Amino acid sequence: MAKPEDDDVARWAEDRLGRLAPPENWSPNLAANRVRMHETLAHRRSGHHIRLIVAVAAVLLLVPLAEVPVVRALAQRCGEWLLAVSNGSHAPMRPAVPDLTIVDAQGQPVTLSAFRGKVVLLTLWTTTCGQCETEMSWFTNFQDAYRDQGFAVLGVAVERDGWTRVTPYLNQRPVNYQIAIGDTDRAQSAVGPSIPTTLILDREGRIAVRHVGFCSRTEYQRDIQKVLAE
Image (cartoon, rainbow, N blue to C red):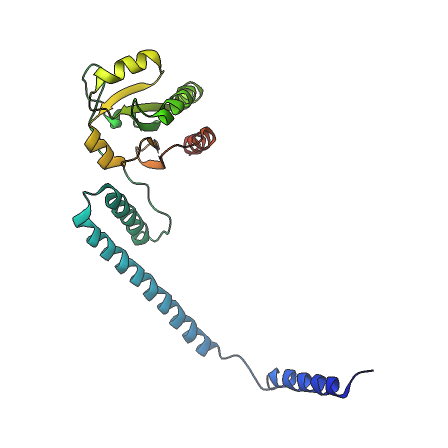
């Protein structure tokens, strides 16, 4: 049997619900609703403009400190986001690969533009990096597996002793992809201070994937296949 207070609660709820019903002569005010909608959209656009202004200010503040590698990377990412926003997209545009000065074993310059039209795995490594040695065997396999699909690996050794140190190292660990020597300071300031650092470039020479530090073979393989399929 319901308690008296339960009946009171039920009557109170019915009364409140009844008051929510619109009067019989009620009709929606479409003009007022359109005005409210435009006001809401204008507010959202103003918020978008505020974010754009903040991004510009962040880039300007970071420019004087751009010689610091970490700050350089942060400024680059802010710039990428800013370009994406200005084009009406929230997805960052792919940046161009940093300009590197690299030479082959014959002392001839190696230009990244020569690889245009191919998906390129560009890796920075040193002879003292154990993780780099592990990755080299993977990259050798990738070169064999994907060469016919327009794929190439380019290993850039950042060694102050240059080929004097790299040549005997490669004699003990031969690879099937091109190796070049990069200026240590310029390479690390352009790409980052961490070794290994590996970039996967799309067929236009833009950075599609960036791996800083050691990465698993599965991740590399997945990323290579994804960029090749584009």
